[in-house]
Image 1 (cartoon, rainbow over the protein chains, first blue to last red):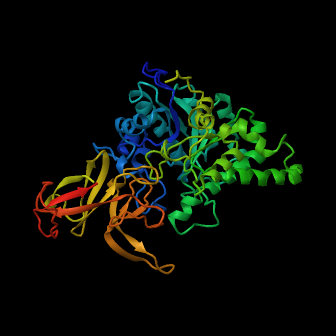
Image 2 (cartoon, each protein chain N blue to C red):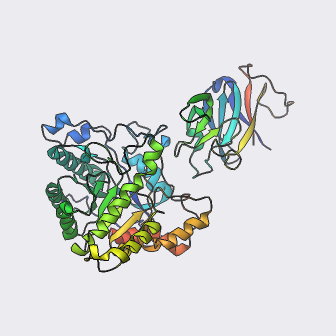
Image 3 (cartoon, rainbow over the protein chains, first blue to last red):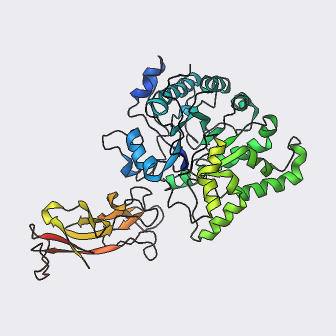
Length: 366
Length: 134
């Protein structure tokens, strides 16, 4: 049941600022998650994500450890101070890291997804959210689409859950038909599906590169490979024709690869349209209505003009949304990650596009 | 150029650091093996508080597959993106010619007062004063 606690109201005060589309809240201790897990999963849940491919230096900003202890991102007050207040964030889209998609047992993955959703709703989206600055993502186990659809149904309508989320780690490209129950449900509730890196090649998931790379630098650089494969699959399988209301947020999957990939895909489509006759237009033409990318980690060529050109090539004014990835080590500062942008484009990327995408309340000018 | 008293030598033991504000700037003062250095506490990349980073050694350039760990205690790694800087020069490791953080002079003197002759002492004088020149 979705809570109807009166604190779950949304105010629009001080809401003209930046929308940060990738912020990671952490439980202070895994027992916070276990409290929501029924037996036998409570005893068996050990947390954890990939176990290897860890950053050799640090995985979270060293200055993001809360002064009162606990992991980075576990203290809502400190997160407010270091991110929300520091940069004037109007809304932070929260992306918990449940890593529920690694498990071979779908019942366990489903239980973990549900526990993270209960935890998020009871903490960050309610008692730590009197002003509505935090917006949540519904964690699902992508490997059990029917159960995932039921989990989405359980949370749709919650005033602060604004999308569904899955790791990019998968056993098959996301356009394939086994995922249809998820998309039907997302569409019915008008909730975008966010894809976020994680669990690629881990647990039961395949690695989207030819085998396992040796180093973290390779693994981390190539996270965008899975995103590219998922996007090509979603477009060519006709997901946006079958589910015209379906929307996908590509979060932390990289940015600058988009124009070249779409040129390639559109060129292929001209010759191979016969294979995918359900596409009513060039694949790239679906992006503006159905796909958004978040900006972090933004590629930054030495010549800033080159990046500005890529932003133009990719229709960034309509498809790109700012994200910081706080508190992770590759945090993009709202004030330093981008080169100087034209004011209209800045406003689109940092605020307007995400406000429209997540249908967040309009804000008074500050 | 301003002269700022950081503290006693014994306040900042080898391997340690102190963040001070001088002339409106946040600056990190480091004791590296008994020698003092100072760097601007703002990473030239995205303005992170650089001087709060970890103090490490580094893997030296070598042949593929070779790991030579050296310069222990001389390398500052940004607390956000992990860029490495040479504490003794402020120069980055990946591009020392083009990417660097502002470095300041630090001396160890026998008095904190400005009107004394600026005579520097060896850092082995443990009750000397660390003076930052900004």
